[in-house]
Image (cartoon, rainbow, N blue to C red):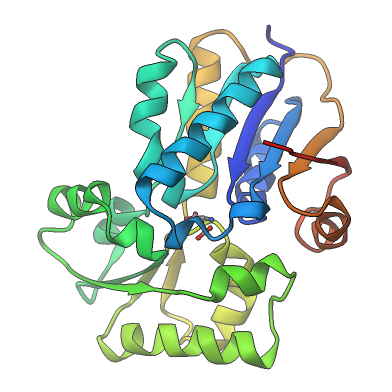
Amino acid sequence: MREAPIGVFDSGVGGLSVLAEIQRLLPNETLLYVADCGNVPYGEKTPEFIRQRCSVMAGFFQEQGAKALVLACNTATVAGVADLRRDYPDWPIVGMEPAVKPAAAATRSGVVGVLATTGTLQSAKFAALLDRFATDVQVITQPCPGLVELIENGDLHSPALRQLLSSYVAPLLAAGCDTIILGCTHYPFLKPLLRQMIPEDISLIDTGAAVARQLQRLLSARDLLAEGSAREAQFWTSSDPVHFGHILPILWKGLGVVDRFGR
Ligand code: DGL
């Protein structure tokens, strides 16, 4: 069981930013990744639809013998992680949510910005997160429609993307944010571009590394950490594997085969 793979999924390529953190921290683990590109963006879908996709993914990774599941997607987590934990009570499941707690602790200006999908920002789980950790700070939320679609095409710095991103960041800067939460796993790929757009003393926070650490804790507590060497990562996409195969090397440094996910 220790050598069993870990299942990771996202609506598309965004979760690769999390996968990289998992691989960095846990290099012995064999990783399986499903990009649900046929249904991207999750951020504009209903919670019911996303819950259904989460259930399809969980069923698939169970069949693959995955020893743990990672929802490398904030939008999927707010909609679906509670149901998955109810349905698979003994399976280590790691979800992710915008880093409100560390941002509230880090801000000096008392103003924190959140870039995330519409689905995440409108969720009850996100409202609860603010109630719990952001009572003493001002939080400016900014949905970013259109950004995920560009990143899905491997676009990390075209003029169109630059313009869209800058229109989303401008209100946060105007409000005096000194800490910006990247609340969608696609956005860490835009960090180099964001750094050019914002003053140096503004911090960018995402949760990929924290997710990897949480996964390590859960596996270690169950004595499930792999000891041998990892097998090559395997990727599936519910859209075109050839297209995914072109984008993958832009966003993922390792090797891996890509198959079609037909569910
Ligand atoms: N990458 C996802 C997230 O972390 C969702 C992007 C989308 O499909 O809208 O929220």
